[in-house]
Length: 440
Image 1 (cartoon, rainbow, N blue to C red):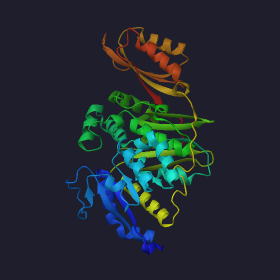
Image 2 (image 1 turned 120 degrees about the vertical axis):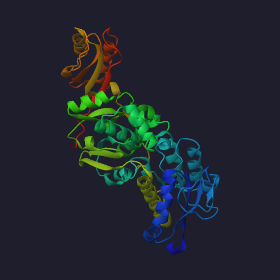
Image 3 (image 1 turned 30 degrees about the vertical axis):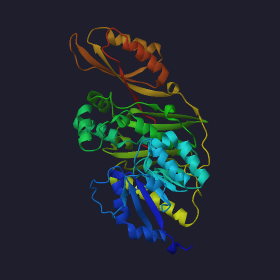
Image 4 (image 1 turned 180 degrees about the vertical axis):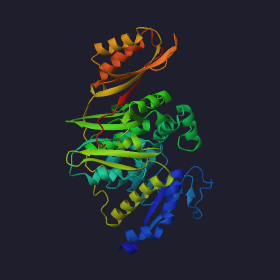
């Protein structure tokens, strides 16, 4: 059948912020998309529980329905766009669409990080496409870069800032001297953070994305439990200030590195040198570094969230899938670029090495710093810098220590002992120092 005689019909499940952006973009770019394809691409049905709310877009009568089955089971739909998020019933809907021979576009990083093996396997068996560019980095085309652009190289690291909410909070804390709780409330008021922000500020969202990035970069299957995950709840304004005094900015980083046949994956706040490009990434922007043996370092930067940036990635996947269906070449390239992932050996977090920023709240009395230094020394941790400015005779003051590089396991054992000292008031704050990011 000639292109001019074919129409690619898409259905959308989830008519929230991103879904609204997709509809707006498809409507706005309709003529250009049809010209690129040489055939019409039409969004014919949208499913959402809310069929009354005004999203600011005009839809044909009967186009908006409340039953998702009328999208993923419909015989007149070729491609299903899933933008509802979460694990279930998104998994059911996506697998239902694939089982009926429909290709799928999704922005659901949680779904792919946890159920990717099942979903990608089903797509391979049915010979349909899965587009998921919008699942990592919003409008940044990082999936295409890793799947297609650097296939000639051997990737050794992928790392960066992949959560806009946390980056916004840390940026505001740095620029305005604000406290974490106050900035979080502001982010929620502006719609940059959810009412329950746990997935973002506890690092889970970044861990989901890192699982996908590691699969693309290394061809490895990581489970969420394989990713050491630490959020930013414990980062205080005084830590931001001390970090700047030491020549750093605090950022929530997602880092995956290859060590021979093994992989280390971690998400945690870190001190980034002020001169490094990542230190200047502010607001809701994301930046992802890719490091290859031949390529060296390259960085991909842009808005990591938001209606239109994310919708741009979704529609790009939709167009690519439509091209494949028109040419009868669906599943020509596996979604992750290779037929099957391998389960790698994991490098335990305790075996990694880093320099560290420590903040220890202690009673202001003689001998406490000496005890701390003695414990660090016994665990093979040497001190590079000590900051102790405030004095409060008999009260509580912060002692800030920058260490030389040490093994994580040794550092954690030392901190456990320091936390039990009679002169310490609470558990020490520990942030890793990312002096070895490359690309600066």
